[in-house]
Length: 462
Image 1 (tube, helix red, strand yellow):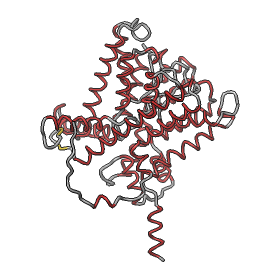
Image 2 (cartoon, rainbow, N blue to C red):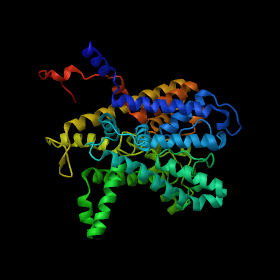
Image 3 (spheres, rainbow, N blue to C red):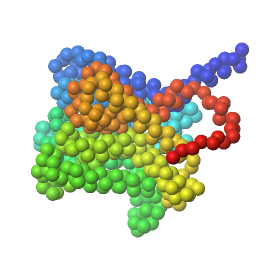
Image 4 (cartoon, rainbow, N blue to C red):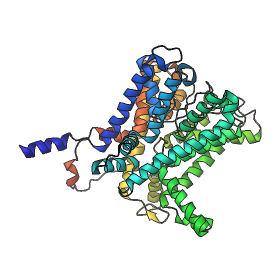
């Protein structure tokens, strides 16, 4: 009887993936009910469930697609609820749970430590709590600095109290790569030539997007370099291979994105065509950054050329880097897949980067992430075109934005019907959780087929 009970308990225990999936879902449901209360709206009226659900989903999933204007529909309480949901989404429900545990001075069990390790994709549970504390502390520090810097622009514009609120909201939203704001209906279009606003927003987006592991490694090496007076070459050499790869990939994507936007939009009078050369470069760079899951816009997205939109879909699909606040399949994921392709073409036995081999397990994981995300995105894009009769380009832009948790739209979101809103919500939720996690959510036990070895079959590809 005892053996039966233990077996039953073991089978009923949730996996870390299931806890993460259910945790995000619970946060969305709670947020939806909070946003439905009359006090959460500017007019003091009840918000229908589907609108509240969509808003809670886009906030928790740090996406930024909205069916009602954040600045006008919601009261200060409603905006505060949205901001808290964005912060939870940026941290992740597991980090929030861990923070509450630390505040209550509760001990972390081994299972909780393993859960945190899984969530952040860390190699070891050693120093896990210290890492977690630093994530929370440094996030608030960066967001606080961003809010202070924003305030020099927004307090003169909106007055003291509203200026502070706009600054705080924008700083949190930018760092968490949410792309929502409480300034007006035009996102940052009114500030497209404002250098401080552009640079502050870009910095916050990039810091959130490169991942905690990278900037912790960067800061520690910077401290050592200053202390021991290392030159740039030694500083770079002492960075971890993951940090070096992420920095290189981020710079490549930002620069290439800027050049492509400039190329396709240079003479477009509805975007950057009428700007000075300097402002064209600034707007193009910002667009390249915001493609990487940020959602803020300094030019109208519906006015972008089709070529820019296709490039944008590609960049939204890639997204930011691992262990950060950005979405997408992640920079390292797509790099590993492409590296494996080129290694095969060059007839190399194993992919190598920075004199380090990439494991077969990592290649398989990266390939699964790319294909599952691509299949989900294509399926949802077709579904959105069917239920909303939306143009193919606008539907593609909307769904790539949703699954990449970006928040950019060609003015389609506000006109979505209920089935269309459900399709986009599925995209945002799956994009934040990851299609692989969704699949693993329903997998409760290890397959015994892994213990069986089969003889090689004769198949033909290519």
